[in-house]
Length: 215
Image 1 (cartoon, rainbow, N blue to C red):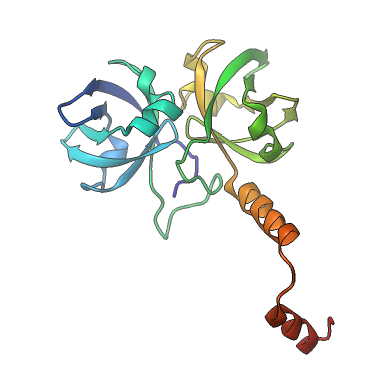
Image 2 (cartoon, rainbow, N blue to C red):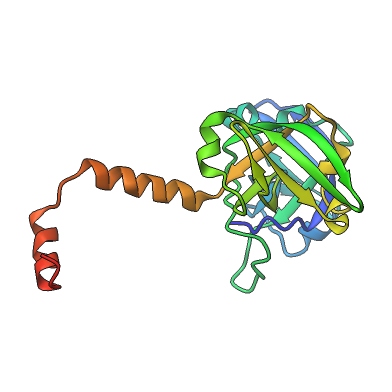
């Protein structure tokens, strides 16, 4: 679990196939503090397991599903990436509940300057739009952001100057891919509503309702 508050911008040292799969190595500093083999680190919002560590970098394996669903497969040596360690019991919840499980990649539709702020519009598959609401949370490349406006297949967010200097987004171009993770709470609510709509009240449920004066 993560909060979507980027701790550090790392730099890709290598992203290449191996005899057994595909490895991503990242040069960094902050997220190495306290990290051990097997820990989770979010790279551009993708939860990865640390498989090797040195004093200046970590390595993680990329599964075929990860490469297909996210933008990590497009990284090259020198690419900047957003990094965040998984939460601890004492972590400040500055963002929202982020799983590091990317739903899909979106595409940058536009950048618009607004004094020292930057508006970013993102185009996403329409199937995701039911989870994206005005003033709700969305995670872009691992950054917890607040949705401002929504359309049929797009939404926008605004980045204050501090955020702009601490995340990858402003270094990208229109048309570039971004990892999108919607707020998981919306998925749970949708699933519960579907379940309730397709099941009948059981005898046990009726007994409980009667005991509490509702039936």
